[in-house]
Image (cartoon, rainbow, N blue to C red; front, side, top):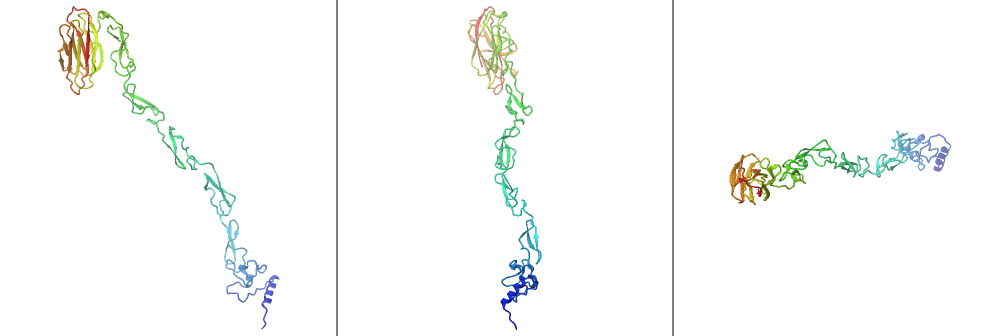
Length: 420
């Protein structure tokens, strides 16, 4: 048996590889079962044994091993290496690799991007591509008035609404609403100066109603009198007045009543036209309007001869709804003058007269009391109408009638006192 030196065998193998011969490489005796053998390992490893050494050939052991896909052929690339457009090599069986193409990123590159293009960033910014493999934040402006980035219908704090009376108020950083825009009571925006159903009219009694959406109209209500004021006037504007009827009724300063204006002094015993024009109930001198409880008042006048009669009237409002009492007195007499006090109710009911210091009388269809004392004694009358009683309105008109039975008397004055 011939023994060959180990060193000589290695040298022979190296010489065969370097010369490019295609003989089969005799594997060493310690190649385990399943390792690659012979010509399966010859490609490339003979040219440069350092290339793919871990796949097909081991310089240390001089044996062939399986490639990265489990086969025996040498592979041009390794599984996982980049290929194509964003792809990588994968095994296609034991002896072959194929390129597994990837989808690529949104910027045209291959790297995974974070954040993605289009994502929000910074203060109302937007993420954009930075080349193919990266992104950056592109500012788009400033925040809205609520601190968000979405466009809003208004600006926080500014006026809003159909009537421009509201205020834009933030609900969230990207939401806003109009608060407090109120319309008038007719549904419009104009300041009406009042509200529907409020009292109105120069003298009250009316109510405001809508006249469209932007105006009010006063419906009903008491109208002003001829003086331009409120309240009912006694007499007619411009009528003659005064002791000698040489004045005219005119509006008082408050426009609530008529008063005698322009009256001049005259001779009471020589009245204009031969009469003082207050001899009848229809032409009675008006003392005014009063309420029960009014204090005592007086008036001086004259009977210019024995045939003269003076008639005065006063309207009395029953405000307490108690029994209404009228008091009359004729004094400062220098002649025998007499006095009658007659009463006429506003409601038309028949008075139930009680007379104190005087006698019950009916004159010209009117019921009342008369005091007919002789001489110059004071004539006093207290008239009590009990027809209404408590809690009944006894308002009416009192007529004061001054006269004398002595037709030969000349002109003398008197004082008429009255109270309610």
